[in-house]
Each structure stands twice: as structure tokens, then as C-alpha cells.
Length: 205
Length: 200
Image (tube, rainbow over the protein chains, first blue to last red):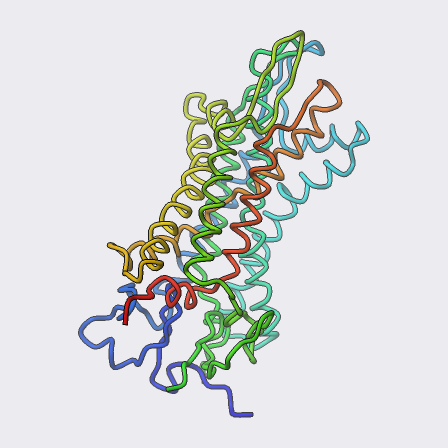
């Protein structure tokens, strides 16, 4: 087994867009990948700042997304505005615990996991921590992977409203909360994408 | 010359080893996937993407779900769902939904078809590099599989109240998700060598 070396120790750099290993000298004068012409950086610039900015945006947007109603229904049982949490409770009480759990996972557990995980990554990188580097990298990959499943509730509300537009049973219309929730998904995905996981492994001696 | 692989997640340099069917190369330091065996050629890739295009067309032209009440049938698919979100400024959510469930998957299919069709003819597609870069940036925003799950949740949610049935679109989205997942297993470096195959 040879020692594990990082790219710059060998005079190399990675193009994160096309996966090509480039000699650092090829970037002189033109800091772009010779294969795909993407700009190449040693580490993503302003990674921490961008990640933090998107994270804060996501957390702030999450408040109206939960406080405001996501759907307005008008039917035989009367008019009603429902929030995300209200909808989950309704499923739970109606005995559809599986759907309740699924929506809870996508709309509450996933965003919260992302908030906490990204904050943890930011703090530990800021401290130049060498604690659990492997696990923290895995955490980053999990955050990247689960990100877009939060869009589930937006899609469920959209489909429900589409089907219940002029039905005899009543109507369902989207409300402002759903737009905020969509923005939360975008902000948290952008936050995860801005983070450069290589920062976890950089040594500061 | 040995090909070098650099880990996206921890920047560790590895020497590439030949991969057999089913092999996945993992980073020795952080466990990230460095490369994956991908058996497809430009031809089989083109066949897969053509299948994806057909499923995509079916999913968008037929109802995914429909309910019937008092003889009136209401249908829903991606487009009906997008339109139902277009209420005043909530339309930003309609745009988000259209982007992630229609525009991005559609663009992925069209762009991949374009580069692979040229690769099959042993030519480099016009606009090759910008297209490959664009596809790399679009990939995380493709949400067909989330729409599929959303449709299934809606079926169960509404089934208590109304007779609801799944249309051809559900199967088309399921098939599309599967094909896109197979194509998504291919790592960026392999795409580049596969799609840039030009006459020697």
C-alpha cells in the first residue's frame, strides 16, 4: 500500500465537472479544464460563506413554510386551511400512519437533518477539526442524496389540487406555504452543493 | 500511462485499475465512489436514452392519475400539477415543479440523445463540451422519481374519498425513473470517454 496523497502534493488538480486529473502547470494563464473548459479551483471559492448563506436562507424560509397553510380545501366538511404539520396529523388520526410517516420524513425529518448536518460540517471545518473525517464525509454524501426528496409535499399538494379542481366533492387550492417550502428545498440543496467536502480533509499544520 | 483518479470528496489520488462487471472503485480514504463499471457503449446508451424519451413522452401525454365523480373524470399529470400551482405569486412553486419534473429531465434526455447519436456516428457532437458541462449541473435537479412517489402518495391519500385510478403515465414515469437511474450509475469520466468517441 502506498501512502495516500492529496492531489496538490503530486502537483495535480481535479476537474469536478468531468472528473479529469490535470497537472497544475496546465492551469497557468488559463485556469480551466483542458477537456471540458470548466473553471478549476483548488477548493471551491467562498464555499463556507455560500453554504452558510444558503443554510440561513433555508432555515428562515422553513418558518413561513410551516406556519402558513399549504392547501385550502373547500368541501362537504366545510372550508379548511391546512399546514404541513396539520396534514401529517390528519393522516395519523385517520389511521394512515404510513403516509403520515412518509410525509413527516420528507417534510420535517429531512430538512431538519440537513440543517443540523450542514451546520455540524461548517462548524467542524471552521475549527479545522480532524474528528471523524470519514464519517463526516459520509454525512455530506447523505445530505446530498436525501436533499431533493423534500420536494415530495410540493408534488402531493400540486397533484391533489389538480385532481380536486372542479370535483363534486370539493376543491383544493395551493396556498403560500407551499411556495416557501419549495424555496426551502432549493436553498438547502444549494447549501449542500456549495459545500466543498475536501475542506474536511485539508490539514492545517 | 496510468490513468489517475482523484476523489471528489477528499482529494486523494488513486491509480485507476481495470474494472470488471459489477465492480465499483471506492476511495481508500473516504469511501467515495471513484468509478463504476459501466458496460454500455454509445449504441446501447443511445438505445436506453431513446427508451427514456418514449417513456417521457407517454408520461407527459397521458394521465398519471384520474378520478371519477358523478360521471365527470378529472385527470392529472405533471402539466396539470404545474398548472394547479399557478396561483398569483405561488407560481414560483409552479415554476420549481415544472423545472424539476419536466424541463430538467426533458433537457437531460434531449442533450444525451444528441451527444450519443453523434458518438454512434463516430463524431463529436456540436457544442459537446458545453452540453456535457450543462448536464453535470442539471443532474441534481432532476426529480422524476420524487414525482412518482408523490403520485403514489396522492393515490393513497385520495383513495379514501374518491375512486381514483392510475393511468399509463404512472408506469411510464416508473420506467423513466428506472432508465434514468441506470444511466445515472455512469460516472462523469466514463461519460466523457463514451460520448466523445470520435473516429481515430
